[in-house]
Image (tube, rainbow over all chains, first blue to last red; front, top):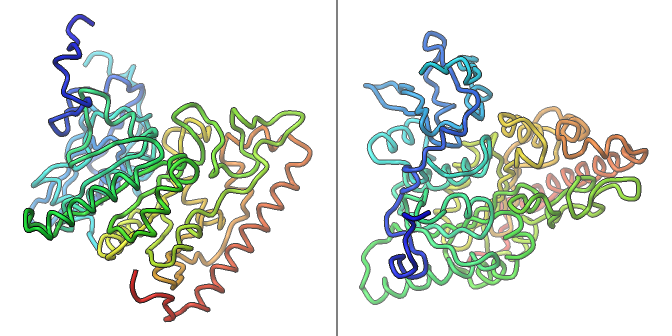
Length: 102
Length: 325
């Protein structure tokens, strides 16, 4: 608590003067299960990218095609929405205990 | 209408408009709504200014010194997001008239939960629409005051369990029907109003585009489950809203200056019981002896509502009520 700012140092009205600062807060710590994707099955339809409530899936355009990128585990809360909306069932949720060594 | 390619392309070359690190529950549907709304606006070339009413979305995305918003953002109080955003819009119009700002791509988006829209914020919403401000109001409807722990709101459906109207021996939970908020907004006449769900993102994006292009007040009500207090698994919010459309519980339709249009007409419907039994918040209701009576009443209501919508669509086809706001 000692590193908190006093009232004189906080901007008037509690205004946050920089955008998107919540990225400093890693919500991935909440996770109890994580999505594991089978790239062989994935058709790069980007449904999971669109639905992810934590915007933790990366996507890119390579040439003419869309390409699903990495799952950012620092923000993934492990809700399983990506696995639920996947039309080809390429994503499975695995308990975090299986990744304890990482 | 933006397509998935445009959105991926936009995020790759720019950034998310609503970013990671917000503290909404895992599986919550509210961040999907906030993300899609701002992303659709951004990818269409607009510069959204967002105001959010007090609620889950506001308290979880703007915890000082963190903010999840990558766009100009304002929060004022619970009851006045529409008034706040109409003030911002009026200031922008004034600056533009005085040639102090030269940008006609700025759009104003207000986001509220059902508490801040159906109950507490209804007067400011009605005022802002009546004054004809050019803004888009997005309601994420999770059917209760979920941020403070599941109190009933004007949006809670009959038979649902809440802490202020619990189901027990004496009572069957909430007794009243849910307000039809889009009809209330449509009653202002000079408005674009629509319903949407999280299971139909492209229907939502199309309505969002229409709302942004509409020169006047626009309103989109999105059914966005609260996984915590609807007592459903984290990953099933989207599946549940899909069922809500298929059972006529939440029909998808729009209202544009007097013209009604049903935007999704499923070929076959499921009984509303299928939707109700999927949600854990009705578990106690189903154990009561009067459960079937309440279900039948609800089924008759959604049937009548659907028939009414189809009749209105037929009646108002190509017959706008107003030509200006």
